[in-house]
Image (cartoon, rainbow, N blue to C red; front, side, top):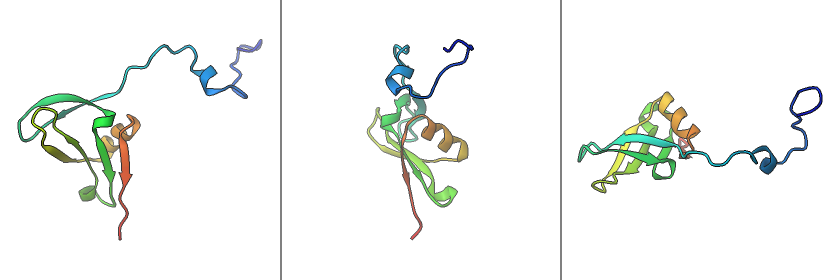
Length: 96
């Protein structure tokens, strides 16, 4: 903090900016399997998000940790926002 009471940002490295942070809780998402009806929490690395040209081609997918079945569910605007903001790997589908 400078003498004027404001934070100096220019010239600050990323490591210096985050030096005071001890650890950050990982983002987890609640999900369910339509096959086995299992309910669980998944980390961002367990999910994939595909954004297509329409709502029919925008979805997220994961493999059920209980039964191993691949699951694909539609993703509306809010779901896309939450998953992308939470670090889920995103694939943008292009119309051909």
